[in-house]
Length: 319
Image (cartoon, rainbow, N blue to C red; front, top):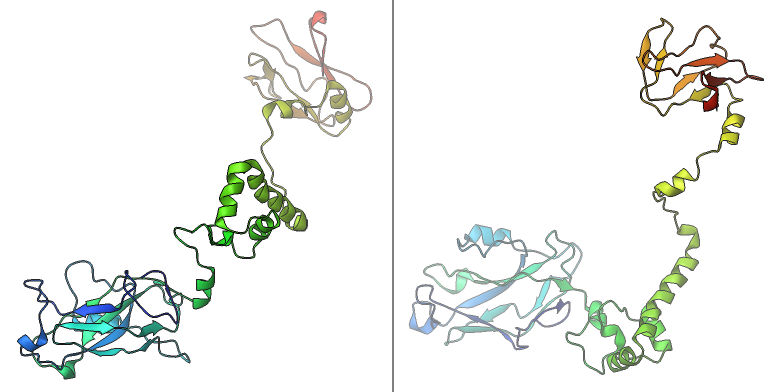
């Protein structure tokens, strides 16, 4: 029966003692040792196996493979499995495990699971091999966790912390108790009468935790919408203020404008041209379009920046 806790007796899924039957693999019928050469002295040994032991593939296993899967207790601790681990098979071909329990949980091995293995003690019989019995893998939890385990399904009289995601004496449990919700029946009544307020148990708790851990909160940067980015673009006045720096940026929105480089070779560009007034003279830069009437020429400007003017007065000044 699952879950399995330490210090609790192992029982089957009907809460009864575990029975081991001797079965003929050819007929799948239970056989009695008395009807065979095994006699009535057959004894079985109960062991703990690694949960990773492969035994469901249908190919079986060897004695050496079974022995290699046996798990011993951790150093300095009690035997991993205690109780009556050496049992006799009765004349009906049945052995009963009525007193066996784990002393340690299964979290310390890689698979985090155990299996129960049963083998015939070789000194108790002579003859053909009796294949070992192996249980399914299962997790063994510390018995202290049994005090806080959930009930599936929970009863109406169960404490509210028996429900999933509600820890005993945790923040949600305390908050519910402050509202008079102590058991599952109280929870269901409150959920029927005022479900929105029931959800607000949880929301207020998150806000309180965030306030208490304010120093640990981190600001998360998010992408700014395009419309908001456009509002941050400097105006023409701010551009003039920035032009007092050592560099000036000239941009053109027309892809048909052509420029002349130092060798007076026309080049096309739609990107901005960068220049400094230390390297710019009125004869060094000129722009002319072979196919258009619009051309740009540098003109002196006050202080240490410059502006571009076009040939057509009606187009105004280009900063």
